[in-house]
Length: 400
Image (tube, rainbow, N blue to C red; front, side):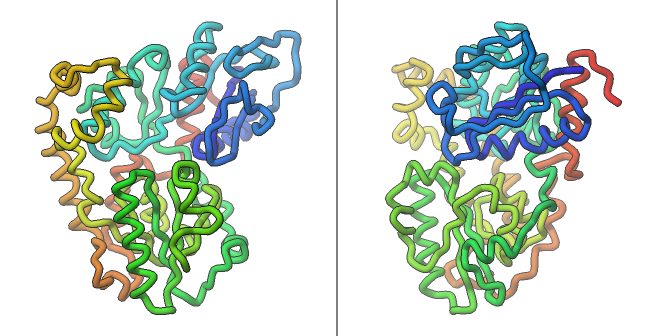
């Protein structure tokens, strides 16, 4: 039987992994889950006191020191499972565990719905040392996998399993708890707005929040679910109080499932969080032009806004050399695929308008179910089972 070590450095990673832990526990397979459930990333070497753990492995004499954990594990893992593999501390842990002979697997933590210049660069970065030592990547859907392949992803280490984060999407929904915590009114029409950590998008988003607050009647209540990174990056917007009066902030990722189920209308870019909206069959309103995402395919805009950052990542100061790295021949294919995808999305759902016509009813789109294909090939809440089977198979363990 394998001994599996799982690691999550923030709340988002915790949610990506916790259902796999539950599957291991159900099967009575050996595991050690080290996790930080705070919304911000912590390095265990300096913040181990903020971490928790869950394990069914007893102490043994075969402990092994893991440098980038900063302590001894009571066993040598056969398999390590993590996410966000191209960022510290996970990136450092990949090398630690490969050096002691563990197999390392990674769950995709992003939704690759479309390509732009930055997706190309992120994938190139992911394929550098030590991230390229990972033995297996678990992806959500063929659509997302094809998006990555188009941008240059090496595909032979990938297996499509669905998204384990949503294996319990219909479990433990506690409407009474979130009504009490956020002082919500079930007799009103509740609008859940999903946030963004991108400056330009947030500017437009906050304009929409203010517009809705001023124009909608008192029959509506507006909730805002920030991107987890917003709390750190834009602290002044949240403390001591939210910068948009009358809008209630959902402050914990663990509450999102219940709030999604409770809310009548969801407003978002078409991105990972909208899977909640589709699965709970809610009325989903998408931002016009996906808040200008197509501009991220414009090479001139990229040069002005993004080149200084990415040139440091790849240590290339010449713009001409950097264009070779991007491979401009790919952009035409990116644009063609994006335009086809966006046509399908915008023809299937309500699009936000300042007249607020979308608020006149709360009936979901009849197209919700067909749009699930972009996120998950299975939609059966069984991704964790496939992941555990795959990890066992790769190490020669026979699944029951």
